[in-house]
Image (cartoon, rainbow, N blue to C red; front, side, top):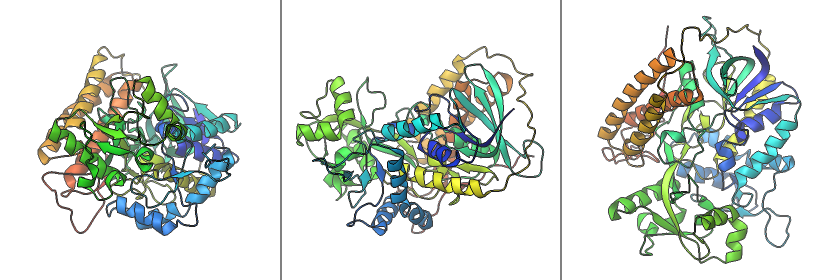
Length: 527
């Protein structure tokens, strides 16, 4: 049995920030199922939203967030996050993150604007902010003597008092599969943190990396945590449409810097859908593109920023320019073919302002958590901000918490299972799940489509549960088990919302109800 003060499951911005904030006083383990930089945070292009100039104000940032969230943001949480934005960004600057400066060698940082924002307040590192931030923090984490990084390890399940047959509801750690040595480790910890990101891979088309399989949300649910607002899955309007692109995002900042959405014949269409045109929030733009594609039978639409100077595009969007050029698209002369793709999980495990879940000593931060900040639709570049603010909040709470008696945890028991004989079952179920979620639980939904999805999920759930009980666990099986659980929570939440709001649009309930309420699901109590 391995023992640590705090076990962090996930190595994105939230997890790495928390580890660094705790490591001077605690022994930390970071469990990451691939490499340290393979999560969604490193893929973030746009930047971090924070009030940093005299012509901006927290009230304006709060107003923009509440507007995008379509009445479902928690106002206390929103103010809590926004008012800590500048300090969070300053902490990253102190860590050495190379944010972009304004032209002419100025010491001022360049701020961009994205959809839904009334001001330029997005600090960024060209168009690869997440990569710059993650690399900086990862280097610091690897150099810290009190941080143990367990790469190629995937969490199986949390170890709670209830699982140990105790009356108390503490989390005592987790079982973790060491993929390289094909063995399940028992990791005990005073505090356990879910920081595994979202569930984007539940859909066929997504901007998320392969690691986004809803692990933390599913583990939290199985352990007894409530989840909220899982129907609000954000589809990014502009994912590069190309057979070899593999989930490449075209940053919202391209529209923020003047990019125009057009039909194949060159007609601009966004002003017909919303007065904010290309700078409308993501749900509005994604639905508009979906509408135009279905109406015209189109494979994609086009995002044109070729009217900007070539030098400007190469400086501000070097990653996008290089990637597109490699695929034969010169963004300085041609429009970019784009389609919507699943991008961000707005719901998740319910937490308070200290990042605590319903289970003592269990925290959730980042995209895994539902803090109330995003409501029915996340405002662009608020996600990395949320990671930073709640990493700080969790660190403060963890460091103030008194130590509890260490439990001797039972080892993982696989004495009654055998090696799997038909691995094709896992890959087939994975493929089926992602396809019907895309078809039935996508940008536009109906009650009939949701019923079909629920029926198939229940069949898959039964197959996978039987497989899990009878065979040795594998990384693919664990991810599929978590994805099916996440899909079930998404569909349950969507079925319970009898209105259209934010990212949830139902043809059967097109109206918006006057009294917005979050969707809260409570797991069944097992004896």
